[in-house]
Amino acid sequence: MMLDGNTAVIDNDFVSHLIETHLDDNHLAELLKIIFSELGISIVMHPLVYEYELLKETPRITMLFDRDILNKAEFGDIHQDDPVKKAYYAFLVANLYRDLRGEPLPLSEEDIFTRWLRRVSLGEVHSVAMCLTCGCGIFLSDDGDSKALQNLIKDKALGNVCVYNRKELVDVHLEQGQTKLPRKERQSLTHGLCKS
Image 1 (cartoon, helix red, strand yellow):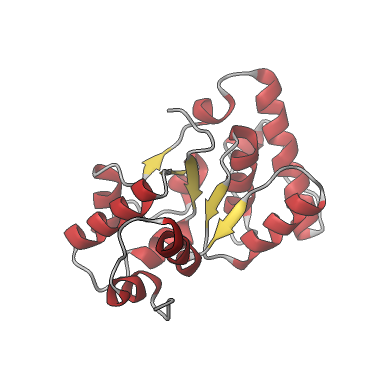
Image 2 (cartoon, rainbow, N blue to C red):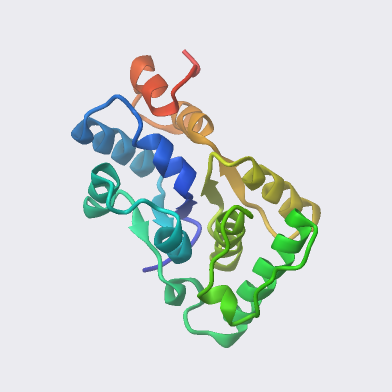
């Protein structure tokens, strides 16, 4: 799978909130297809986030992956088995974690690719490192630490990753997309107020 500037990385919280909408499965799938295709992005999830955070057996989540609305990346997609890219990725994960959490990452460079830690924003760190390694400019996340990571990246001049929560994604589509989704559908996707 090619990961590049036309790829957006999605996190578990974003997916979990999307499936809580009051839309039926087909309608949800169609709205997401419209938004993603009109913004010209394909959506992928980091392999460790998929493995350790996502409730994969949830029928709506399974449906989104089965219909290729969401896709799972593999580490080979991220670093293309290039030792330099792999080392850069590991460097990013360790340094972003340290900068975000204020403590060293308690994993070795090799463990970064296999081990998991809960409740320390490791999924967000991995996802943002994936964005930087592959040139993906968008991270879809409802987690507050993702915005902090966006600012860290900007402050350190590491690149540019735009973090969009559900409302921001829907608002970007409203401004840039061709199909103007009805307000009720936009509210359902965001569980709140959107632009009229």
